Amino acid sequence: TKGRKGKGVMVISGLGLNNQALKDLASKLKKTCGCGGSVVNETIEIQGDKKDQIKQVLEHAGFKVKFIGG
Figure 1: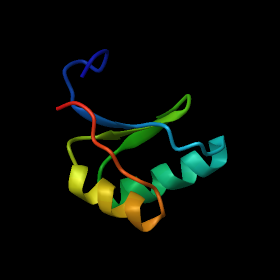
Figure 2 (figure 1 turned 30 degrees about the horizontal axis):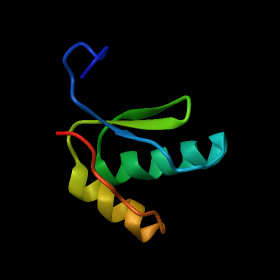
Figure 3 (figure 1 turned 90 degrees about the vertical axis):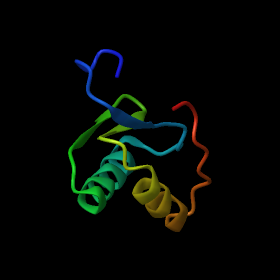
């Protein structure tokens, strides 16, 4: 929530993708979760707490998922 006016977001980092691939993945995650989000530097920020849905999409895409924090 830091710097986001108290709103909760999921921050996804460490994917090792180029900028266009990050935008494509962010778009897919936003559609799946039915929420907003953006790509900031090397991270994807998805609004709300949608851990299970995001984990499912990332694992299906071949990424290893590890939750850090809350």
